Length: 279
Image (tube, rainbow, N blue to C red):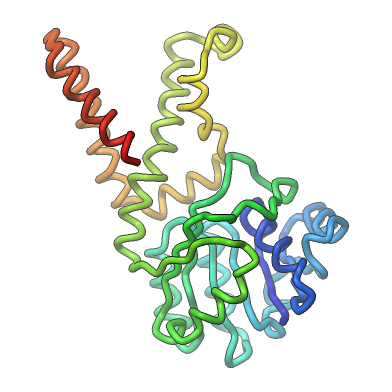
């Protein structure tokens, strides 16, 4: 089976290396960076490379779009103009689905499209972050269009080497869920890191004093800035609603402190503790 993977960053390369290890598959990696393609080929992450999706898409049985959301949308528009195989399956790894599914619905309704998003990944980026264990036991959301419904089992069988846990979901539920459990935590980490620098000075001035709590909370602030700008903008409405909720909770803590209301502060912390213990 010919599998085209566009985007050989951490997510795409980790998918590619798992699939390319299967004798029945021929994985073609697509990326704009020549060095990425050279490294992916040399390390056996892919069996073949191409610099443009249009050069290899028509021979693909499965196409996996693993770029940021804006890149996925551009790729879908490109694919809509190509003579693809009639039974091709197209999927993606974008972390927000509204815009992607909308383009797929208007321009690729005749194709089996299955939106995808795995709850996997680290703050690392690039082809050197390829990890064949990245998806193991990770929740992997699937959102099929009408034609994609019939191809769900085929795609899950293809992706079985990932050892992920697949779950179908609708677009709205997915994006609202991601806003609170993925997008806002990144905003919180970015904001805390920026606040620390503004209050304490350069990291070189205070970094030697930080302990586990600060490091744990800000770990994801090391994530790819361009990627996360793209993610947040593509889920704007849901993210804004979720950040408002976070700010309301921060305000509640501030009010309890300002009023020296120990009982209210205790209740806020206990509520969070109880919820976290059941996570």
